[in-house]
Structure formats: structure tokens, C-alpha cells
Image (cartoon, rainbow, N blue to C red; front, side, top):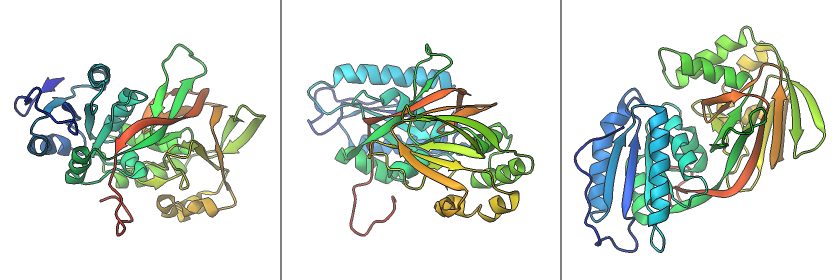
Length: 337
């Protein structure tokens, strides 16, 4: 972990009650084919101009492990230092993996998260309504405009000593997880094109999977399905709207179960994966719950695009767990800028 782009600036004691004392920008330099590293100096400069009495620190991650440790340390310090004043800000610049590090650091802490999107997916940003443009993210930080959202807590049933993993968007466990894994392991990542190619490649030899589900601690369900996706927000895989009705402020999880369909149907419906209208198919079942236990044969879980281990896994919603900077709603705006 290295600090770059000049020294962090501070006018100690001069920041007003409406300004955070510190903004820490965590950068994933490889995100967006290196775009994050290019964008970081300009974002830092604008933050310093707009918040002249706030300490702005830029940290470039050298590994996911170091980034997680650093982010956790930043939030722990900020939580202690922010009593009685506007809290410090943790900001991430990268893709969904970097945003996930921020989510897991800030969950339940009261420290707000700003997401500067620079990845090929940016699904959490899309689902929660955070700005797409860096200038709008900076506006939100300056204005202090946040939304308090729910998070999904993923707990390993097989390893109760493993700490929970906090999820902002979607946990995938079937065909969707295999598509995501193929993209993650690909030497060349072309964003949506990579996901599209992986969808077709996996479809050629994919067979339905056996799931064992326990919904809201209820009766066990044995299900044959292509996938079971559980969403706090609706998106994964670079804009695939797998849980189109998901709302990260409603205190519930949305579950999409795709029962077996033919390859032809899957290919024909591929464009509708992005607009969410595929859920009209009779083979698609949707439901809502506050918790779900997922088990099955040969299944593994991906959370916000990151592999978190094999099933069995328990997922539950924890309401009002994270403050995230979002667009201030305007009457003429229908989507985040």
C-alpha cells in the first residue's frame, strides 16, 4: 500500500462542522484496464479544491489483502475520531471488488462510503443509485448527501469461525456464478463483452444443479435450477439485472430462481437479462425473504463478483447498515448521472 500523488493536506482545526476532517481515497490501480490509476490524481485534486480544510489521503492498493486491512484500519480510526462531528469518509476508486472492500470496512460503522466507479461492471454503484461521474460523486461528498441502505450478510454454515462477508449487490451460486468465475479467470477482460462470451460458453455444457433451500428458517425446498441468485441490489455481471425488483432500503432480500430451460431459450432471452424482463418466463420464480440458507451439490458462492467459498451458506438482510453517497434526486433525472 503506497501513498501517491503528493502529500495529503490538512489545515488542522479549520474544517467546519459541515466538512469531514478526512477523506481517504482507496485506489485499485488495475481497475478499468488502468483507468483508476489515471483518474486518481484528478479526483484527489478536485477533492482538495472543493474541501480545502479537509485532509485528503490517497492510497494505492498493492493487493486485495492489504487493501482490506488498510480500509478496516481507516474506518476503525475514523469511528473513534468522528464523535460529535461529521464523520470521515472512505472512498473507493475501482470496480465492484474495490467497492466491496469499502462495504466490508464501513458496514455498521457509521462511516459513509463514496464509490468512484472505474471498473468494467460497477454493479453496486448502479444498483444503489450512486453517481456514475466522478464530479457528481465529489458533489455528493461536499454536500454530505447519503442514503442509508441495507446490506446482506453472508455466513459460512460449514465454517462458523469465518467472519461474515457483507454484500451490497448479489450472491450468485449457479450458472451465474460459473459465468462470473470464467470472466474473473479470463486473461482478457472486455467488460460486458466478456460476460456475454462467458454466458454462451457456459451454456454449451451446463446442466441443472440440485439446490437445497431454507427460506426464512422455513421448510426445506429441494430445487433443480440453473441458478439461485439472492439480491440486496439487483445487478451483477456488468449490468445483468438478475433481481429486477430489489430495493436496498426495503429490509428484504430478493431471490430469483431460474428453473431448467433449454439453451435456445437462454440464448433468445439473453438481451432481457440486462433489462430484467426475463423474469416473465414461466421457468423463473421470484420471491422475497429476510434470510435464506443455500446448499446443494458442487455449488460455490460469489458475492459482488468475488468468490467467497463453497456452500452451505446462510444469507440474511441487516437493515440500515451502510451510509453511501448518492445522487441528490432531481425531478428531471431518471437515472444516475
